[in-house]
Image 1 (cartoon, rainbow, N blue to C red):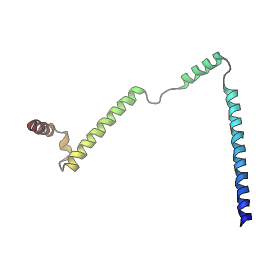
Image 2: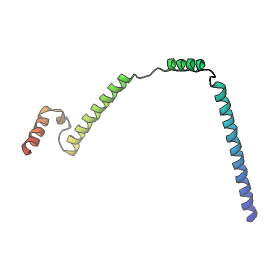
Image 3: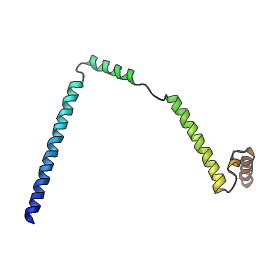
Image 4: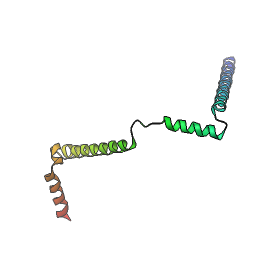
Length: 113
């Protein structure tokens, strides 16, 4: 029994050492790549930045993103109102979009105040 435990400990320690060695090897490879790819002069870094700026094009422009967010907000608001009025309030879901319904709600609120 004791022999099995020591064998297991030895196996675990050898696995740990192998893992550490492979990890060290990977970090050395990554650092070499970074040293090779990093520009040495200021002008090279500037040119590399200009190249990276040129390559970046947005798939969806910011103004279109804002419009999409506003439309999604309006859709969620309308859906929430319909579910709240139709399911929770036991009314017709489409009645929530009628002006008379909102006028009735405003009258009730103003009457109590």
